[in-house]
Amino acid sequence: MPEMTQIRQLTRPRSDQLPRARQQLLRDGYCLVDGLLPVGSIERLREWSDGWLARTEHPSHWKYQGSDVKINSIRNRSKRSPDLPQDGVVDFLIEHPSAIMSGLGLGDFKAGGVFQIISKPPDAPALYWHQDWARWDDPISMSPWPQQVFLNWYLTDTHVENGCIRVIPGSHLKRFELHDHLVQAHEAGGYNIKETNEWMFIDHPDAIDIPVKTGQLLIGDARLLHGTHPNRTMTRRTVLLGWFYRKSNVAPMDWDGDIPQEIVERDPETPFRFNREPGRYLRQ
Ligand SMILES: O=C(O)CCC(=O)C(=O)O
Ligand SMILES: [Fe+2]
Image (cartoon, rainbow, N blue to C red; front, side, top):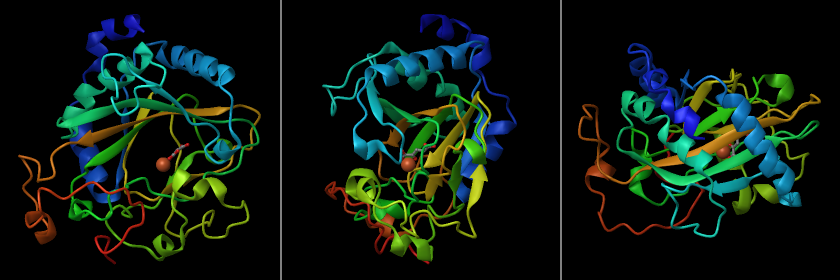
């Protein structure tokens, strides 16, 4: 999508917005900012994603997400998933928000290289409560700063009726009773749950809905508990979701808050082990 990147003056964020958004990201686990997209981007992205959705067979385990079409970028390609189809639109989605990321103090984050097309068709069920962090055996799970975030571009305005996201603010750093009742997300268990599962779809008293306007960018900590409402409308609700990561497992250079002792003492050789189950590093 080369036309999009030409309009440089639109990609610089307003100066007061981002420091406040950063505070919210640290405290609540998410923030919503102006995505500064060039005119016409949403329509183009909708056309692009509708094309992929139409060409892709939807397996039954996509029921709760709606779809999970993964597309690799070209210039920022994920080497872990070399077989995914590649598309330059994903490079735009990765590169466009770089000034926003810097303004949020996330300038040291790198894109995973892939975006997911997650689209709820008309009459689609809710997405269950889950969190997406999978390094719970590692003391870095306690970081008061984000280590992994999702960037969500919604391609329609979202609201409760068409399946907007809902979150439990603060759940990225604090254990809620709900944590102990959840089946782990997606391939770790969520794919196979029943729609009648009470905990996975609970109307939790601490949950808040996050309706999003097209053009806004929702950024969330991977540890945040989130889910969605069902889509009860006749129009599909699509989000383009990409993961961004910090490579370093020590405090950011400019971090002036506390650093948990567990992180100070963390063995730099701690091996990666996939574990989505929050354990002793998520405290009450
Ligand atoms: O559909 C959404 O709004 C969020 C999707 C999500 O969180 C996921 O697929 O892990
Ligand atoms: Fe998620």
